[in-house]
Structure formats: C-alpha cells, structure tokens
Image 1: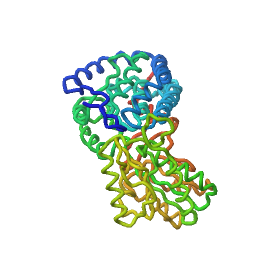
Image 2: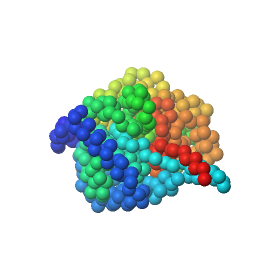
Image 3: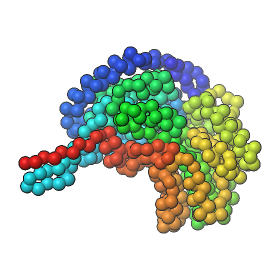
Image 4: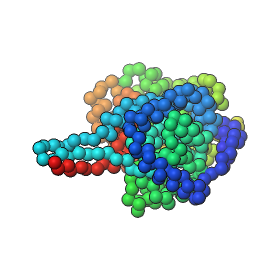
Length: 454
C-alpha cells in the first residue's frame, strides 16, 4: 500500500497491509492480553496513558511532520491537533477513576445494591484520517483506561501516524497484546467486520457508518458511529463587530481545509447585516496563504484525497448552474498536489448540493434570511444533526434558537469547538452514541448490577 503526500502527489512510503491470517493472529493476542490488562489497577493504567501524553509532547515536531506529510494539513495545525489530543487525555486521566468507581445505589442493614463498570473486552476502532490523533484519542484512550484491549485501524490516508501512535503507546507501557494496529484500506476494514469483537467504534462518513452498523448488527455488540454533518450557523441582525464575527466564522468553515466533521458547512445571515458580513467574510478568506503545508504561515494546504477535487467541482458547478454567485475560489489550481481554492458562494438555495450534501472541503454557501424563524427552519432542513451555531449579543435569544436545533451540540458565539468535558454526539445521519465526557468513558463499559445480601 503506497503512502502519498497530497501536497506533491509523491510516494513517501509503502506499508504491507494486513490480511485475514495476520488479523486473526492479532485478535488472538488481544483476547489473551485483555484478561491480563484488566488485572492492572486503574491507577496504573492512568499512569501509563499519562506517560503516553508526555511522549506526544516530547516528539511533537516529528509527529507533526509525519501528519502533515501524509494528510496535508498545515504544520501548525498538526501541532495544534497533537496538543489537543494531550489536553483531552489530561481530562480523561483526571476523571477515569471517578467514573469507573463502583456506585452504591442503595444500602440498608440487609442488602447493598451496586453498579460496577466492567470493560467490553476487545474492541475494534475504525478511525478517520482528518484528525487521527483527536478522533483516535476519543476512542482508544478511554477504552484502554477502562481495561479493554484495542484493535485500531487508522485510515489508509493516516497509516504512518497510526503506527506512531502504536509505537508511543507501547513505549509508554501499554503491552503489545493490548493494542494492535490493523493496516490497510477498506478491504481490511471489511475483514474486521467479520471478526468477533466485543464492540465497534467508527468515525467517518454516514454511508460507511450505516454499512458498518448494518453489517455488525447480528453480533448484538455495541456499535457506535461518529459520522459527518452539514453544520449550520446563523448570524443575527444584532451583531456589532461584524469583522470579528466574519473572521471567526470563516475559520470555523475552513480550518483544516474544511475537512472537519463539525466544520461550519452552511451560513445564514440576517438581511440587515448580510452585505457587510459577506464583504468581511470574503476579505478574510482572500487574506489566507495557500501552499505547501510544511511552510510556516500557510493556512490552506492540499485536500487529503485527490477524489475530493471532482466532488467539490461538482458542488460548485451545480450551485452556479442554479443561480449562485461565486465570490471567490471555485476551482483547483493547476499546480502539483490536491489543492482547491477556498470558495465562497452567495445567492444559494436549498435546491443546491452545496447546501444539502456534506462538502468536507473549502467550500461554503452563505444565504440571506429575513427572520429567526426562517433561519431555524432552514437550519433544521437537513438529514444531519451534529452541531449548530448562533451569533448574537442576546444569550436568551440564542438559547431559544438553539433549543429548537436537532443537533448534538449547540454553540453561542463560537463554532467548530470540542471540549473533553462535554459529550460529543450526533443525531440522525450524524451518528449515535457519545465520546468524551463521562459518557465517553462509560461508552467502553458494560454495567453490571450487584445485589449483595448480608
């Protein structure tokens, strides 16, 4: 399997993918190793994972260089991702013991009733390429803290990063038979779905997530899917610092080239501030530096996958054919690598693909609305339900709007943000289940009820 640098199209490595035999061997190791791992006290598992976070910090420059070289995100954004992973790990290690401790629900002179949180066993984590450290951390770190063994399949577009993660976890003290990496493309993922894992945790597209959920349903084991979104953002008529709001929301739409599950994917602006907002938004987008992601100061690097260029071209052409106005971008430059110019479309409608299909790239549609009611109706007009954002000076107004959003996360005066202390979950085609927070720790447990009569 060739590893390609998306900024140049050059091969930077090759990896031998797993096959059915090698995966079965890894599974057997994990099955045996999990029993021993569970005997290690939670406090010691916390120490090992804390040591892993320290290794991320100590090796951040080499790790960021690899991540940028195979995924294409600007070098500083790669550093930010690794540091974000460390921040999440700190919350998890600080709170794991609290949420894994036995809970006494009732006790009297004759009986005690306890909930004990036991691990699932051996779990399979099929992960994503856009934030391999962050979305991986959401799954394999709490899984290990709980006492599970993990078969981790990084995306084929982030394989070298996945192998770095394995190396550092084992250097920190995670036993070889507790964490194993499965390398390969969709064919390897298919083999994993046929194996007898005690849980499946997937991050990726709705189409793939739906397929995985249906494929493993007969196993009657947990299957959690963190999927995509078509995340809306509404700018009300009472904002005053339009320049600042435009800059912040543009970053929310285009950070990591728009290749974020929770990236802002469609924007609704009240007609009273629409013209000013669009002008400031386009000026912000046109100020960014585009180019080789290894160079400092670059904000927009290449797309991670070549196939995404034709997909984005189709969205832009569809919008223009239906009356949209192209404010900037809209094409792939004739340079090496998988680049697509940051694209802003106005005069858009919900008849256009760009306002209905997940773009997962540097393309945004901005639509004028006349009222909060119109904005709410349009924001909820989607099959997805990951995040929704409102910008206003009035918190009560914001919360009334956000309470009517069919989304797992609601933002007031911010967007494209994830906190380890809050659950990360979706609704409808954005998936189900939770990572992060106490819910994301207990997602890797199976509670057992103890009735203890004296």
